Image 1 (tube, rainbow, N blue to C red):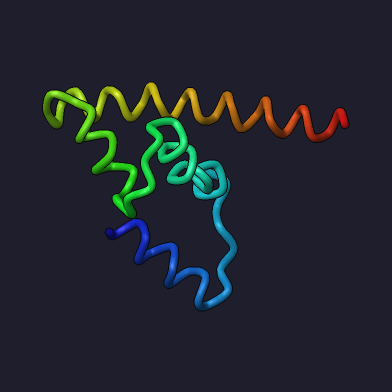
Image 2 (cartoon, rainbow, N blue to C red):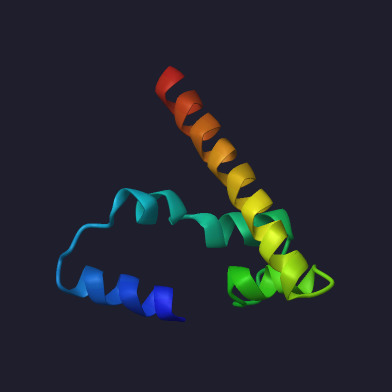
Length: 82
């Protein structure tokens, strides 16, 4: 919730996203597609749902985020090549 509120406030006052924030854009929709879920739940709740506990969810997050970044980089490279 805090991240969403911070991002909304920054957009409202016209502050552009930082590089790390830009890397995170699209993660929510990527998680929804990966898990075939369109429930309106946050990426954090989706990851927790598919984990045994919060510790596993945190570990899973880092693996999923790395997978997402690789997917995003590959997608961008394919767009540039087209």
